[in-house]
Picture 1 (cartoon, helix red, strand yellow):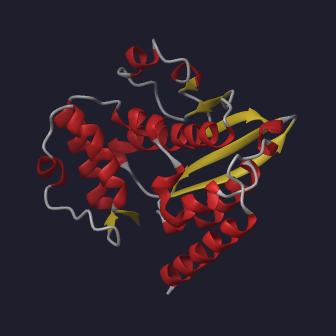
Picture 2: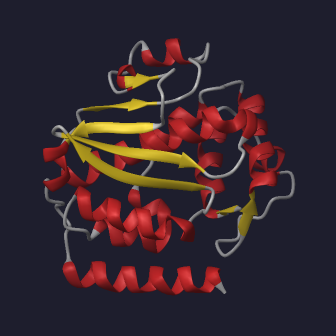
Picture 3: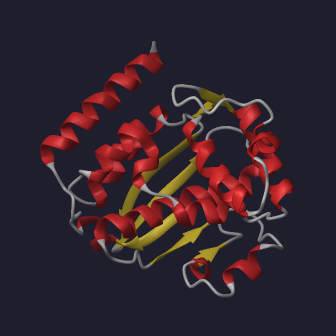
Length: 221
């Protein structure tokens, strides 16, 4: 399992705000856009970032800042998608081009949409970094592309961390994050799936998806 190395640069933007030198966090890891960081190196990197900054909730900050453009060709495909439903379909298929260590699936029932988040690799102590970043990142991208706030909740099957209370006290979005649930899920009104994206472009979406297919095929080989 691995993660595209470009994501490390976004984490370094956060660690710099705490006055931490890049080299201290990286410890020799490459930021080459074409490189992929194995999970057994990614987890120590995330834990170093939290230890050196003294901020255990660093994953929350990462998720709140996330943008579609962070995700390479998958991000461009999502930007040009018709709506949330199509964006999630693209993400479900092409997320392995970013990392095979995470997955997602969509179900609808009783007027609710549930996007289930899956950790397919053992992130160990960094799981409460990765999953909040993943869930909050999806929500932040949806807000950005629709121009509306995703009025839903993020449920996590993790114990409530001691550090979360102070972070959520002044942030309404974090007050809709619930720990101790049965599954990792982003839950919202099903009608939101059809809210159109401002930058929807059928041709651009098809071109970006074709490039994602090539990347996926290259990974399979």
